[in-house]
Image 1 (cartoon, rainbow, N blue to C red):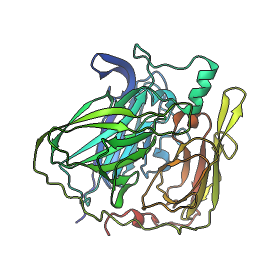
Image 2 (image 1 turned 90 degrees about the horizontal axis):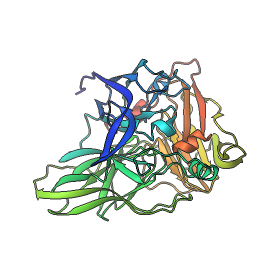
Image 3 (image 1 turned 90 degrees about the vertical axis):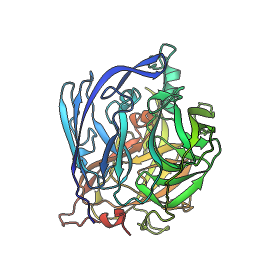
Image 4 (image 1 turned 30 degrees about the horizontal axis):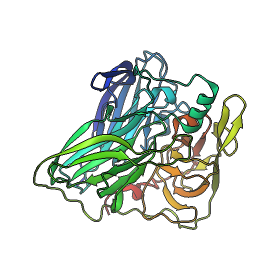
Length: 443
């Protein structure tokens, strides 16, 4: 039975406001509807989403709908849209074709605007999703670099500026849903679905729940084929993971931590606590998580021939100490791709540090990393590239011509040049929705 799709409408206002991140600690945030994160937007797969954005900031802004397969003109980058000036209102309108955990964030002056709180969750529900849990929560990971008075700091001197450009802006104020070290109440005996979104500039978050096992059921592009039990999961800037947690025991206190992860920067990696889960009295559970979640048809063979090679590297710069490069240049215009022509890209990280690679508007499958096939199939739009690695991805440009981009999701690296625009061009032939079958959840 096909459920009727509908129009879901939201109004967002971008502005500066005071935001309390913990008791008695207030910052001057920028965000949507005077909250950090911005309002949680929800729709069902197939719905039309209309978002009217009024910009009451002191500078221009744009919203990128991270992970949504929309028309190029709605992608919210300055390549496809005039920035929204202070005082102006712009209407974003698009269909959300896929169920999953997505998010929206500023795509203008990101190192300032996103750092100050310009982001929020966009959850697309699936009418056919058979996962039943006792509760569902969205957790947006962020960090801020604040001084003792709660003001945002920027390095003044050349060397600290170069270090921040190199490492990305990583702060010591750790936030979950805009709050510092919040306490989360949960009932014993329950299983919950937690949707994680990493909205930070550069913070790698290696999720750990006191070493307890949890199951991954979804990534950027929606559900996996079956749940995957793990005890930790790396979530890099831009990435999303849906997990099933619990059941916990009555009286348990579980820290939501990030394990130390060395992304090869000047910063010393350390284990960090983001939140505390307090487990209350026992309650009966209605949770049911099927062993088969959906089928993910393979786009290309493991050894498919590549038709594009993209090299990410770091090079010296007289003005800024260093530039972040795509194929040897900054802010690149890459070659076009044709609608309906399978893309098999090899992305080489020639640098000595990790980079989260994000492709706008399309999901890809990872075919191999350093010659090794991934353990399981998934749809991704953001993937961590380890130092000195080669990752092969496959994706299909469906009939959404226009200008798209890919970039490193460490905001400082994107700003310092590690990004490219490219055109998706139609061949003049009418093209069927090549991807539609691949993204259908019914098998």
